[in-house]
Image: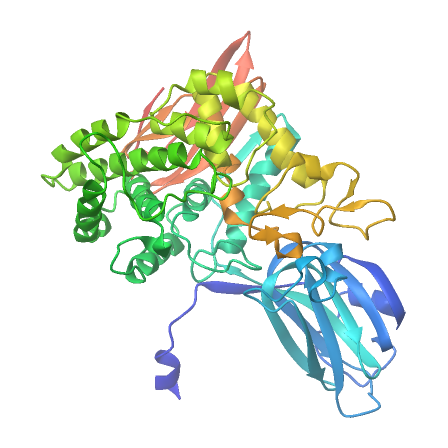
Length: 544
């Protein structure tokens, strides 16, 4: 018995039980308020303290925030037969929880969110592994008595070490929501989305990793997921069969090394990165023409002319990351990277209006940030935005000395999701969807639009759309890196530069985890100037 237990890999996950905070809707149910009270999670002989859902009745519960996991139900009431069928419907919105399979693209994609199960009286069972905030419980063929019903949240045992606070409460909420979004996706591996896209996508990880480093530090989920992506890679060397995603994988390794200083782990990647470098080099001609299998970088540019600028920007960032890695490892191939970058620069595709492609081109150094901001990013700034790669749009505007423009985007784009009930950020969002729409927290009134079920794009239309997607967390690292102004200069955070950009804020403060402990910074405007206070571990050199 002991040897069997010892052979099982220990988990870094923890379970938290969360009671429902409100009953949204019920039909043919009695004593439902008992589910909102804190009672012993165990059956008893007392019938009066149970919620009874009559045959054909249901109850719709709100747990107050997005949750990764399922539910724990304790049945209580003497059923007319030994077992009963209970329908369980999870929803990231009220409308999704009230939907039927097939309605508005509702389905059990990657996780079961709508099913019928058998339950017996005086028992306790756990069901579900998905993303949700709302749950509908329906008695199908007989009455069901329920003593307790709690959400069973499964999340990584990770301590929040970073923080951000300023005089704009919406910006504070956005930082916290972005971090919570990624926290839920930090499962045994780093997920893309907890409801549907429960996969390791090497390219989608980049914004998530940036958020993890500024909030949780070098959490073990990063390396575990990076290793998984490499081990699953096929002979083409393209992770997820997408060339840009392998380049992002290398970029993550570069940034992770600069944060952690773990030279041993970086050295373990050298042979693989060498192979990728040779493959990339063979795909770029002396004249700068490229010949890759696929040019995908993100859904917003897929099938458009802007895919070429977006891909070339990613290519430039990937080669720069390879150069940094080879330099650190004293690999002679580092000297070849500069020539390869010059090849890429020979052809700079035109931008046809994609804010994501424009932001990446500025961030990668291919295009001038001010020109990009003046001609594309600042024009109708909320139109055409994407939750994925939003980080690069924010960084590009700030690089063009338009930090106020970046903060306005955060307030009016990510902040608008919060206004419509988001406790985690969505896979995609368009501000135009909010016109005459109802928030995700309410039953849709007659004449109103369903912001979840009536919209969506690409492969995520209607209820297939994930409302907890890690790639949308870009504002958190942006605010830490650019508003607090904390930038890593030397690997292992041994040297940090503090260069705040308050963008009209009167104060901003926060903490950032490092391998040596937390850095604490505080900035405030006094007589038109920024006054900064810094506290850092002795091992870290701070440059103001």
